[in-house]
Length: 363
Image (spheres, one colour):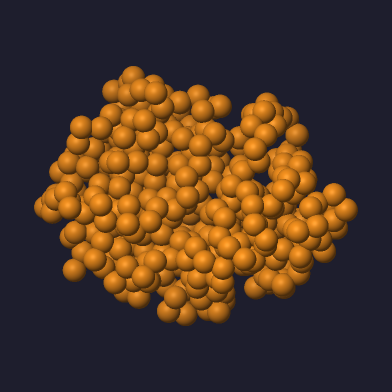
């Protein structure tokens, strides 16, 4: 199991030196794949609140001839975190949850067993990585049990967070940034309780359906779609994350559907979003106290590769693929890139290179 946090502007800037202004998107993707072993790469460009370009190049599996197509679904990993944050925000807007309720009140059945440091943690702290939680549980054997767990996914998530809330904090909650998948799984459990549905059903009803996102799936992509790769071969289930991990990053979708979410986030910055109150979009896209330049689900940077921000960013990986998003809400422009290869095959390198090359074409 491998999860990566959002990419920094500094890391992308290193690649800007070799960026090539490609006149054609297919040519751009070919150059981005370069000498890597990435089987396939896709990108989508948004400008002025609209999709203006989309392309895909390569093969869905490196042991079969089927070529990727625009409209294929890609695993986006932790890039789903802003979607989970939006689900929780939607429930707050509806009055089913509150930003300020402490964790011991939202999960009273765990109040007596969780570490005392976590009892007053809020949803804002969970979703901005300021809850003091570790990145993941250190008990990898415990995580591996969920690959074969037959219980309903909400029960699996509850079992996971019950264990992780007993583990020592990385820092005092509210004092500093600590990237944490666990925080998003805790928030999802809270949302499931408030919404009376499993996370996968709830987010579909509250976020995906209102935005017309029909291609979303959970776990590995199904046969006939871009499959993750690691160690030079198509990945197996246990190379990635358990199904219960979806709220922290285990979703797949088409780039068009991903862009529907991103376009709504940018429209929301102008008071024109479809699923959240204007003040809620602002909260999601505002860095929270404690460092780390993290909003709710988003990394937020002042600029990127010479382009003035604010920039909403995230990177996603389950260890078998890599995906990046960079949004410029002020002019409602942005870029999505995704590959179906792990870092050992250059999936991260090709995805970042495509991002940089597309940024070079921005005004």
